[in-house]
Length: 295
Ligand SMILES: [Zn+2]
Image 1: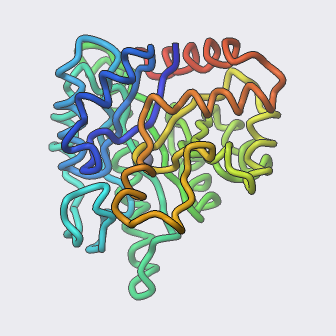
Image 2: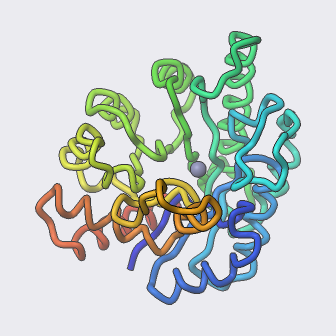
């Protein structure tokens, strides 16, 4: 059994066949957590999870790139241009009341996609919204205020902003239980997050020929700190990617869509670099996810 700890079957890329995609995944013993990125996709992640008795969970949160008006990938929403979203604490708090919600996320900092104008102002806004969402996770957690006594962890997204993210987390009165999703940096960066007690989760990037440094991290950090994910519809594992040059555009984009059942390629690659069997990695990463998200 495997757990895809970060997928987006709640995104527009799956609007026509999300049930089939989920069924395919559950039929091959692969559970999933669908992760929200804004109000609409968070709501949809919960709605999807509530349709299944087991094996499908949700995370809710506001991704840092949705804090300004931007042109969106149509894989995510059906609109080309999305409005800036203001973080609504009570909206996310209400969504998180569903028992299917197992984390707050994905939240974090993303300086890679920042527009050139207003850069500094938007960085500050990202930090402010990030802190509010960590506070939400902690408010909903085991301080006795939540009826189920849940202990919600946080799924962090971080791009080109590791030092700022570390700085913010270290200054918090209480360090959240966190996972840094789609880890794609160096061993040195990995160590800083491990020192905070974080988990690291790996995507199909570990299969990419140029991702030598990411494979090194997947090889050297303790197995009990590793989780696996697809980040579907993005980051299709290397062996499934088609050569786009000779493909008509439309069919190429369909073939390039990733989905939870392909998380096995991530487990396979981690097993290969660590010299372990597939089953050993499957068992360890599944146990890690069950424990971390309290599934
Ligand atoms: Zn994601």
